[in-house]
Amino acid sequence: MTKSALQIARAAYRPKLPKALKGAVKAEMGEATESVADQEIIKSLFPNTYGMPVIRFTEGQKREYPAINVGVILSGGQAPGGHNVISGLFDGLKTLNKENRLFGFILGPGGLVAHDYMELTADIIDEYRNTGGFDMIGSGRTKLDKVDQFEKGLEILRKLGISALVIIGGDDSNTNACILAEYYAAKKTGIQVIGCPKTIDGDLKNEMIETSFGFDTACKVYSEVIGNIQRDCNSARKYWHFIKLMGRSASHIALECALQTQPNVCLISEEIEAKNMSLDDVVTYIARIVADRAAAGHNFGTVLIPEGVIEFIPALRGLIAELNDLLAKNKDFAMIKKSAQRDWVISKLSEKNAKIYESLPSGVAKQLTLDRDPHGNVQVSQIETEKLLSEMVGRKLAEWAAEGKYTGKFATQHHFFGYEGRCAAPSNYDADYCYSLGYTASMLIAEGKTGYMSSVRNTTAPADEWIAGGVPITMMMNMERRNGEMKPVIQKALVKLDGAPFKEFAAQRERWAIETDYVYPGPIQYFGPSEVCDQPTKTLKLEHV
Ligand code: FBP
Picture 1 (tube, rainbow, N blue to C red):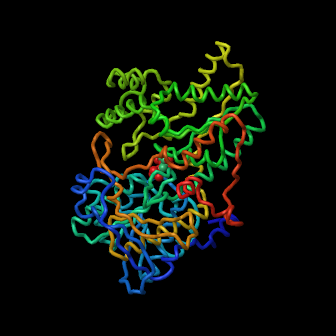
Picture 2 (picture 1 turned 135 degrees about the horizontal axis):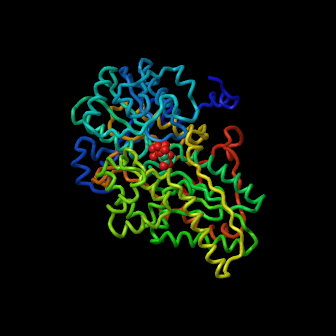
C-alpha cells in the first residue's frame, strides 16, 4: 500500500489510554440498572441481560487469563476511528494473553451470517493504526434480528472457537448486539457480545456514553469545508450557500458545525418540531434573514440544514410515518411502473397526507418513497432538502419583491457534506477515544461480560483521567415503532433545547444572521500545540462545563 508522508507519520502515533487501563485492571460493579423507559416490557424481552450493573475499571492485581478467540464486526455507516477500536481491542487482548486471536467478519453483520471472515494478525493491524475508513474488514447494514441468522452466526463462532463478539455500531447495530447477547445467553452458548458506540451522527449518547466516536472528526472536517465556503462567499459576495449536513434525525452535526463556523442560518430540527413550525414557517424564517442581509447590502450568506429536518416538520412527519407503514406493508412497491408510483401512493394515503404529498416538488416526493434502510429508516441523505428549501425561499423572495418588500439578489449554490467526513483520518481525540473503547471492550470480555457497551467517559479531561467501563445495553432501551411494529431499540439522543450547546447557539444566532462574523476553523491538525490538536468538540465541552 503506497502511503503519504502524513500517513507514515500518523502510523507511529501512540494513542493515549486512561490511567486505569495502563496496567492490570479490576472491575467495580455499580447498582442494578433499569431501561430508560418501558421497563416492564424490556425486562420481559431481555430476561438474561436486563438490570445488570454499570462497570468501572480501576487499577487491579495482575491475573492469568486463558487464551480465547474473539470476533469483531464493523456495522453501519463509516465513522473515523473504527480501525483504532479494532487495534485497541487487539492490543488489549494480546496484553491479557499473547495467544489470544482476533477474527474480523467481512462487510458487517452479513459476514457473520455468510461465514465470511479473516484473521486479524499484528501485521494487518499495524497497517491500519490511526487511519480513517472501515476498509480493514468493511462494513454493512444487515440487520441481525432473526433466529436463523443467530444460528448461522453460532455455527461459525463455534467453528472458529470464538467465545466473544464485539459489534462496533450505532444505535441500531447496538440494538442488534443486545438482541444477540440475549439470544446467546438464553441458549447458554457461553458466547459474549459487547457493543462499541460508533456514529458520526452523535445521537448515541447518554449519561454513560458521552459521545459516539467519529462525531468529533466528521464535524471538524465539515467545519473546515464550511469555513472555506464562507471565505469564498465572503470574497465573491454573490451567493447564498445552502449546505445540508449528514446526521440522520438528530441535528448534533449541524449544531456543532454552527458553533465552530458561525453561519448566517442554521436550522435545528428539534427546535422546529418543538415550535410546531410548518414548512412555510421555516422558509419564511430563512427568507427573512436573506431579506434583512440584502437590506444591509449583503446578498450572500450560508445556511446549514440538518439532513433529517423534514421528518421534524410535524405535517411532513405524519406523512413520512404513513409512508413508512404503507411501504412496509407493500414490499413490492418498487415493482410498480415508475410513472404510476406517484398516483398509486396518492390513492393509498389518507386524504390529509395525500394533499401534502401532492404539494411537494415531484423530485422530493419521489425521494420520500425510496427504499428504507434495513432498520426501517427513511434514507434522509438521499432527499435534497437543501434544494427544496432554497427553491421555496426563492419563491417567497419573489413574492416579497412583487409586493415591493425586497430588492436584493438571490443566487444559490448547494452542497451536501456527509460522505466526505466519514472516513477521514481520526482526530487525536477520536484516535485516543476509539483505541480506549476497543481496549475497554477487551477488558469487558476478560471479565466474562455480555450485553454491555464499552464506555469511556470524562473525555474533556486529559486521557489519564478518563473513566473506562461498561454499560448494560438494556439500560439505553425503549420501545419504538419500526417497520410498522413496536420494537425494543436504543433510544436516540436528539439535541436538547435546554442543553448548553443549543443555548449557546441560540444566544448568538441573531448576531451571526446579520453580521458576517464567520469563523474559518481550517483543517484538522494532528501534530502541534495541544490547544490546536487535542480539543474535543464544542458540544462536548459545553455539555461538561
Ligand atoms: P450510522 O447511523 O450507521 O452510523 O450511519 C450514519 C450515516 O452517515 C447517516 O448520517 C446517514 O444518513 C447514513 O449513514 C447514510 O447511509 P449510507 O451510508 O447507507 O448511505
